Length: 194
Image (cartoon, rainbow, N blue to C red; front, side, top):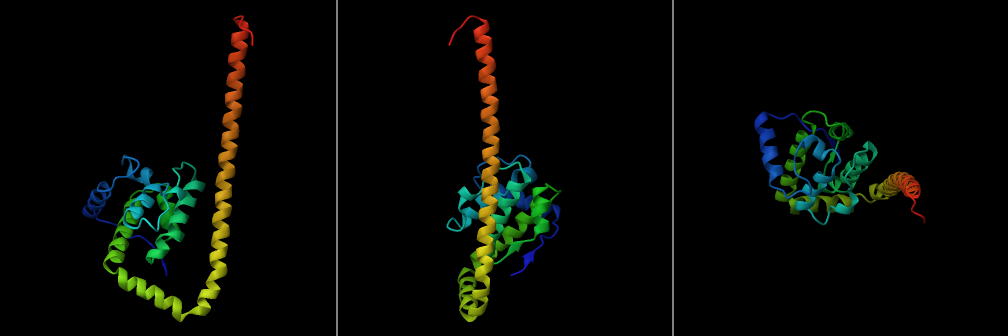
């Protein structure tokens, strides 16, 4: 399975993509499509619409940091799109995260085409995947360590994100403590005792 680069689009194709995206009930309204999709959450929601058993939406959190956006897209790419028979190239993922012009439109078009192909050919795709796995047991054994490495990498990324969240929460607690201390001082200056 090769990683695919999304191709460029005509204005009509871009308008068709916008119309297609508008058919979904997404968790956020579409304001600036590049920024809206940069964290991967809305793309996960679209794929979840077609394949709810493949996409666990709780794995994707809204993000401003590049690290979390990268985690979301890599999770979608390795856990979901790979099972649909394709993966996005790192170049396309980076372009979407960096909100490069027309990057998300190209990726949306590619995902739309692959979803359509998969839905039209689902029995054949499933049979091909089954026969490939039964005819190549040595490849399966070789892929097991790779899958374990991916799981380890995903867990490390999750730990990194959780540590980042802990740090931010600790900063928030310190900020609130200092505000409380300031209010206590002001109240004691006004004659209130605690």
